[in-house]
Amino acid sequence: MSESIKNEISDAKILPFGESAILIEFGKGIDPEIHSRVKVFTEDLDLNPLPAMIEYVSAFSSVTIFYNPMKVRKMQKDVPEEKSLLTFEIVAAMVREKLCKLERGADYTPRIVEIPVCYGEEFGPDLQYVAECNKLTVDEVIHIHSHGEYLVYMIGFAPGFPYLGGMSETIATPRRQSPRMSIPAGSVGIAGMQTGVYPIATPGGWQLIGNTPVELFRLQDNPPTLLQSGDRIRFYPISRKEYEEYKGGRS
Amino acid sequence: MSIKVLSPGLLTSIQDLGRYGYQKYGVIVSGGMDTYALRLANLLVGNKEGEATLEMTLMGPSLLLEADLLLAITGGDLSPTINGESVPQGRPVLVRKGSVLKFGALKSGCRSYLAVRGGYDIPEVMGSKSTYLRAKIGGYQGRALLQGDILPVRCSSPLSLAESLEKTMGSRSFAFPSWYVGKSYVSETSQEYKVRVIPNSQFPLFSPDSRKQLFQQPFQVTTQSDRMGYRLSGASLQLTEPLEMVSEAVALGTIQVPPDGNPIILLADRQTVGGYPKIAQVAGADISTVAQIKPGSRIWFVEISLAEAERLYAAREADIQRITITVQSQLAGITT
Image (tube, rainbow over all chains, first blue to last red; front, side, top):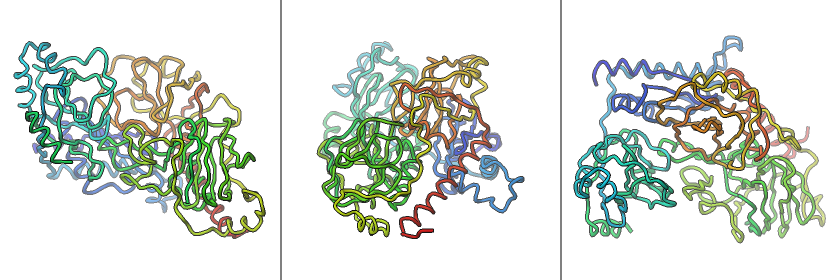
């Protein structure tokens, strides 16, 4: 990791978020550099959780830590009332200490996850539209979509749903005028500059181009999702036959 | 031991204190909306405070108790009766096998909690029994209760209090002690509620008018309010200038403002992340108050400092600590 990023990690902004959470901002916007700081910090949190931490949520450029204020209070119980700090200040000091330590050498190597997609057919009712919109052939759309490398900036919206960055502008397509009532689980879609995969059936306005037989939300596993923040993913096309085999092999 | 659902009510689901540790995977917290009432209900029957309870909304269920049970009802008042006879809230009640516990007209609040001694015997999913309605996981088969459902109840050692109630019960179908807890915070008749909030770090980005309006006029809770969040109507809150914002975590009680200017208070079934600006944060100590406000009522937001919110939170926990100690000695038959 370069020296400049190291410095920026400890420059993160620490803000209160109610009496039970704290927000750590590593920058603004959607940027792989900023996100790598988010990931370095959360990897450290996984290994060395803060005392009184309940859990954290990492996002594009920030991390929010949820904590138990009563446990934090107990940590300073010998301090006289008039000298006692805000619970927030105690947590902020612990976060700052952690950020400073991170200057010394932490780094992260992204996992690469490959996701098979059966493009088109009934799985991708909007594939033709995406091609027409961008003056491409269907095969060109598939080629472009499956030759990109995408960064999982965060998981949210639904269990295991990845917010991906890195899609080629040449296949960007606006959302549908009217959303579908239900999009099947495994659907791969495009919405504006974004692409994504739906882990569970849900209503939505994305342009659907294919479907993956891989389960993104795995209730029995820990972690319960295929993807995690910081992963890099690649899509690769599979035939209808391979799709069926994959599904059949699992059940 | 079990409970049979004769009629399910409007929205009755199994909820505990929530599913923690999985928000980073997009799995929402869920759990009881009014955790204060939920914890009290459990304490009153000698359960761990975070045991699963039934959360009942606006119109409660009708339940056949297929065993002798010690139960407690807390939170909003949905006029509970046992075999047609009114039954009091906020205390343990020993009920005979074969009795029908029926909830009726809404008298106060919005949600009521039913805890049974031993707890409902259903499996945990990702460390919690809470029902995650949208993903159809947890709770009773991942859904709200339906007519004909049989809820198993775990066996548990009898409490000293239950034994003494048993002796005095005679031929009646239920019995309860004279003491009770936690009645005061659900307002009987009010249509207006004060809710204390801490301005969020994005508060200064709202227009000076909007910042004033947040505290100078009431907001009505609309009918598009549910476990996910309360949609409010009143002044239209606007940013001074458009904000380029990327999604980040939201919290219980976050007040976010979509472009239409109508604030939304995020509650138990909130999504893990959101992309709307956040104007304020409801103090943790007032979340239970919000959870008991029904659509049509009005909220006045009151600004407090972070220090005050922390103090209120600690006071609420101390209050529960005190109740716990008192109730535990009562349940063990220790009278002072």
